[in-house]
Length: 105
Image 1 (tube, rainbow, N blue to C red):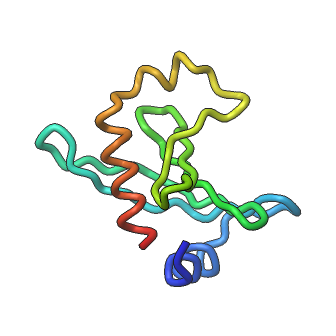
Image 2: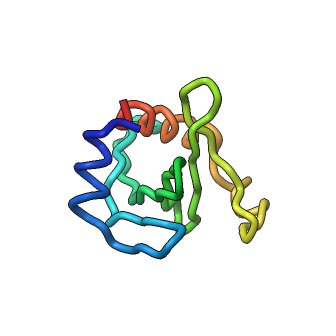
């Protein structure tokens, strides 16, 4: 994750912190999907040497983490129901993944 993103989001807009997790104030990810511009609220979550991006999609929290190829992948958290995540269009998830990669670079 770039230092610019970290300093622009984490250091200036810290929302929540405990000894294991830092969560920033929300920011907006704008993606073009099905010929429309859509805005999604997102948060940067920092934990140790890693991070996740939490994105709210139709009242469902979707977590994205870095993958081995330098991109991002959606991941299921232990408390989440798989059937809720499966309702989200895979093309939309792909567009959000690409936007996250673009923002982080």
